Image (cartoon, rainbow, N blue to C red; front, side, top):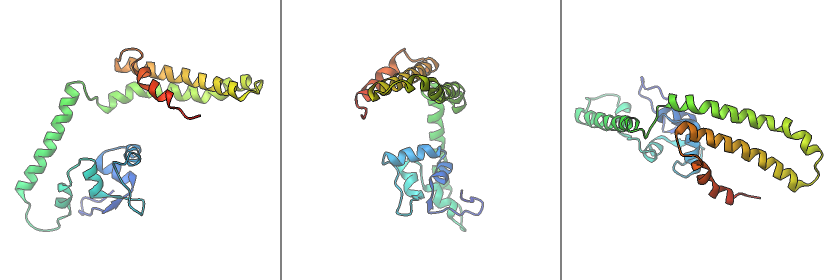
Length: 184
């Protein structure tokens, strides 16, 4: 992380640093890289200014932070403040309209669901080992494994629908198109 007190900003950063600077989880940064929204250079690092522009984050504050001497441009500072205030107001409006949720609320609802799913998936070997040891047909083994995984995923989807207040089956309908395109 750059030291803003000494006004040193690197030109290139890794995924963790970029995530901290823009307020995103590093996994989200890597997802955006995979989707082509962000690009790494030949060193495997992200160009800071280019990445911030790609994420829609104004780069004007960067130049102000790197200025070592000279008077502060009040007009420029006001413009930055106005953009930031407008951004925060959009977020607040999203929360007020119910389009956005505070991260704490999302985590409090989703963590138990994903923890339960993790426990169920980790229990699969112990649950299925006795059944699969007697089976020699690969297609039957595959069907048994797929069936158990689909049950777990369906329970996760219904839990998410319940927590988000969605109509039952909405997530299943959205993912059915993905099922038709599976590999193997």
